[in-house]
Image (tube, rainbow, N blue to C red; front, side):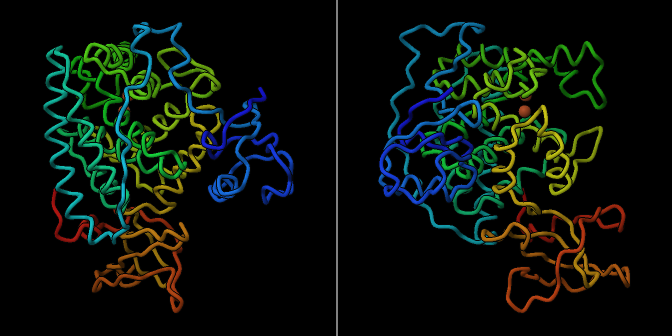
Length: 411
Ligand SMILES: [Fe+2]
Ligand SMILES: [Fe+2]
């Protein structure tokens, strides 16, 4: 469908059918094109163009004002349909190094864990939950992610079996924030995305504990029971007076798939909102990179490679591409070998190139022994070494690899 939109509604992934105004008002020589890079979005926003036509069949649509699937869902009273008026949020934060952010991020994670734990306990008792305090938490997580996204996102990957659901909620919150920023969403949308991530699995609290914590593969009937959690969560949020449509939508639709085989509504791709597609990508990434009682988590880099295969049918390709840009091809914590045969962990991303992170090498694959750790900056001019391969810690008998990027920071 061809739709006229204002330049403020523009987002990466849209297909531009035509820019309104003279060709001299903008730097694009093609009339119609897919808006697939952040640089192109910025170029249009900075040009004299104020309105344009998009084709929603060839690219992303504008973000919905409210969920457009209300006919299949419990209805929210009409007078509550409008988004609540919130003060604009301004995240004025300067980027800092991983080292500078890790300690601060660990404190925020610990504080968030306690808050989410007590909120979820209320939900488990069937009580309406106090969602107001969650906004402040999301602001703190957002500021940490803006200062250095790898610190908090790296920390929340380190879960144990007892805190999985709480840490998963914080992880999806942080991943949603990083992804929303990568997609050039505005501050209100970034905050909504974070809040939606934090609350997306609140319905798990209404699921039987023995199924939720089962240390093994679920049977068909157990899986059917778990599939109730999006709707249970949605109803819990309504009961708790949550009116934010993004939060409600992501909670209900983060398990929908583009090919219409997801749950609970088997929505086709065009009925799944951008925020729900973002929720699906962040949810899957955190689930597969986390250690569970029945399986070890995949390494972050291997997970990115596997997820790329799922962009046909399950995950949205444009959203996934932005996600990769936000966490990196070699996310922090990835074990790699460099061409000289040394093995180390990625300790910091390079904002200019996803392929040139900083790596702390500590093991020699030639002598099969530990060496004095050295940080190699793959982007530095004199750097001769290059990343040769991803590696499995178990293959080399390496333990406690985390210490090489965490330093003394503990959760
Ligand atoms: Fe879920
Ligand atoms: Fe989840």
